[in-house]
Length: 123
Image 1 (cartoon, rainbow, N blue to C red):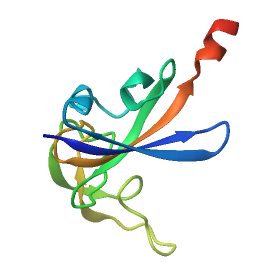
Image 2: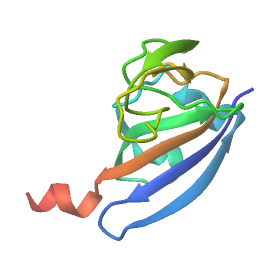
Image 3: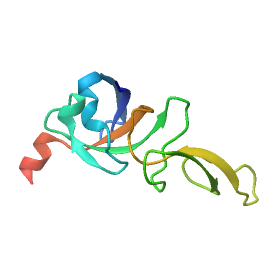
């Protein structure tokens, strides 16, 4: 069964909290992608909407939004998630990254709160 560590950041306060989901509570997240908006009740924030922003697998390889599916692959990167260029020259490296879909191999999922229950009713 899947076990995820969820990191939920709050842009208003600048704080983050950690939640662990296991078993049946983690099933609704499998198959979701980076950029999906989900109901916060899944992670214990009823009434909120949260955005999936990224994550890592159990080996520490980051999820990249431009790699489709739940695969682990080696791609040639020059910037972005999974690669930080050293020095002034523009170089490229082949790095191992994960796709943008959440599978059972993912260990950590990053999310941020985009809508609170009180804000939607006022508008």
